Length: 297
Ligand code: AMP
Image (cartoon, rainbow, N blue to C red; front, side, top):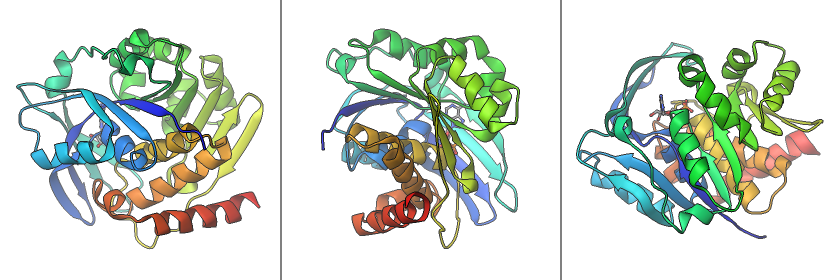
């Protein structure tokens, strides 16, 4: 299969997570991190982002392991982005305890000459002004895949609309899709989002799976039944990483949904990126086969 490189931009964070299974502080997290770790085994990932001088060497080691090009990963003096979240007992909802942008507040990405021609750009969740700045620096009309969150829909909608206008594939969760489109009817919501720019819209529904709308086509997938959900942080981004790695390897939208679902299911089995790092290729293949048989045969 043909394989492309992907430029991934998004947050690189130190997370504090509280849920019924415990509390963890300063875990390596961030949208770009989850996307990179979920996709970096199978495709060539180039990372753009910023970290502070407090970033742990083990974190850098993870990026060295899962990416091929770190020339646009900047380390500057100051504090790494920090995010804290607290989950409810059933882990279905969470509240953001704090968001400290740190070095991201001054970040103005300058994409290197080689990264400007990467054919696929994954704009993981981050301020839309940064997403837009990356799009504007790219050459050669790359495929743009975008993720976002309620914060940006509520606070920087116009900039987000500019990003969406230039986006080919939008990944968004159900609640955010409703917030952005103004309707909770998923089909109508997808139609409205497609009118904002992206021809393809993937609505992620957490433990209920995901639905892809592309032109007039609709493909649904459910989830892999994991034994125990430990932490859902980053599952949407891990889904995105799995999705893009299948597409970049020449797979279909169906393959991308399956691989997204596989990586999402792995992510929730541990805190942070721990289970994504641990999983072996046999387990990934087993889950892929299960989802293919269960939803597409
Ligand atoms: P998810 O569970 O898929 O929403 O992703 C969680 C990750 O998103 C965490 O690792 C956070 O560090 C990161 N995150 C949370 N808030 C933001 C934000 N405002 N901008 C960028 N990344 C964020």
